[in-house]
Each structure stands twice: as structure tokens, then as C-alpha cells.
Image (tube, rainbow, N blue to C red; front, top):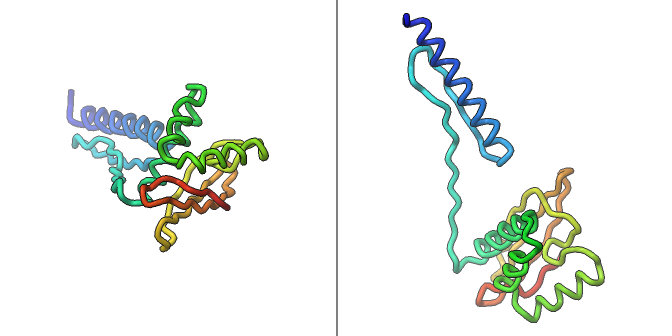
Length: 160
């Protein structure tokens, strides 16, 4: 094979790989980048992301909870994992209040909605034991929740 055919083959292969990476990465919210060269062996690369936190940090704990809870709500395990997450992250006395709220409002008391958000953001409020959760829905609208936690990082209140 001559060098021009080899170069075109590498470019086509790189373009195919880049397309596959983009098709997989973009629905997941990841960013993809690709480089095609004429004769090199550069392949597609997915941008790396890092998420970190500590178990003693309220923002991390609430982000972990909401991330896992949203995933559990989307799973088909009949709510078992969501129930276990509630039991682990929410203080028992407040969990009873959540159930009462759900019965009155016919909606999920953790998400304060009947459906599941597409994304969530958790931020510190600057007040000890309190964080803000912003839920983003499919049409781009948002819901802001204020989440209070006790010294053991258990949720004691979710409000609008």
C-alpha cells in the first residue's frame, strides 16, 4: 500500500472513532474532542472530568444523595434503592414528614415533583448545615430547594 492510501485509511479510521466517541459521550454530558492527521496515529480522546468531595462536607453529601436518588428513580427496581437511600440520608423523623408531604401533594417529597430532573446542582449557601439544590427539568425550567442537615449530615428539612 502506498503512503497516500495509508494516510487516507488512518484519517477515515480516526473520523469513525471520533464519531463513535461523540455518539456515546454527548448524551452523557461528556465532552469529546478528536484530531485527524494525515499519516499520524492520533485517535479520538474523551475529555477527562474529575469530581471530588469529602464525607464530612454537606455539599458533597447532598450531591451524592441527589445524584444517587435521581439514578435510582430512573432504574426499574420498583423503588427499592430509592427507599434505601432515603433511609440512609434522611433523618427518620423528617422522613415521616416527607411521606406526609407526598400523600398531600401526590409527588415525590425529595424532588418536590412528579417526574425526575435531567440534572441537579448543589451549592453551599454560606450557612452551616444548609445547601441549595437546583433541579433542572427537560424543558430547561428549574426548581430550587433548600436542604437543611444536622451535625451527622442527615437531611432534616427540604424546602422551596
